[in-house]
View 1 (cartoon, rainbow, N blue to C red):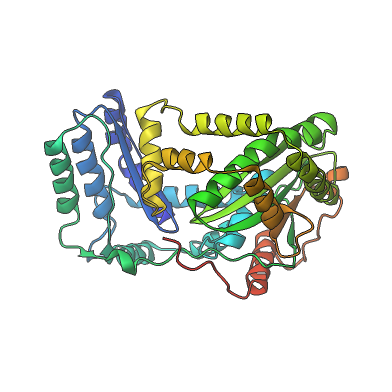
View 2: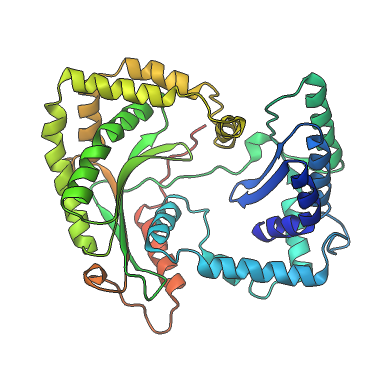
Length: 418
């Protein structure tokens, strides 16, 4: 799928350049749930560009197992090399590797760069076309047309999509594979320690992730408010005063319908163990501060978060991105920010304390906690860097650690969210 996205971009480069002169643009990307195609710009010729991109995209589905006319053999090899290099360069920084491993632990359907590179190592045109044909065996399309248009334009867009997919089998939404999210184990605070990909990486990254449960508007706003209150004290103490690292942050995470909280520190002067211990100590020290917070300070944070959520969009593109994310995530709450503010009004400080004790408190033995450490190769930050077996590549070692986490979780997931 990722090779197909690169080939489509390559095949439409000339068209894309001409469109850019007219202030039109397009992007395509693949994911573990499908393809995202975005076309934007002035509305005059946007449907013409849409029709051309879709025509080239679906031309990859044919019965003779040959590349479409828009793709030459030498360009196939060039795009394949681009993808191989992309995989080899993924996760070179400790920070990105740490986040990648966390997501792969939570989402079993996300394949590692090593596994992907192995899959396309000796791929031929015939194998590629056979795989693409299987991908296009059944297709379901959701689209968003947003901006300066009328009903006639919307009907024209609908007609373009139907014509582009003529002769293809549809797929009911209930048959789309579920996107499972692994349920982090309770009682056991599981940690995954991996060495950085770059042997000269001076930094170590630590992510401590707390899983809070299925998405619900009440839990969502409680976590958002808790992070708003917690972010500044965390940064001030660990980054400014103690200088634990040049990147110190905390924030809420929304992973396909499962809410979580992530603390992240990237450092070249502290070991991963020191970072982990300090985060736990911060949580213990923060609880009395939260409990002793005045009503005025609490309301200031509530109002500040509400203002952030109700800010006007800076651009049409930003607004469209928000709407599209609701479609991709199957939530379809297009008034999500307004609804969250309504829920925010009903929160109390006791709700915050309850959420903290349930999800974050080190004193709670049932919290769901996952810690990822990407250990650098130089200085104090390299303490605890694991060795890689001589007969294994680094990518395989990391994959094995992720698989071990999946075994520990015993295949338990949060089930269907939406």
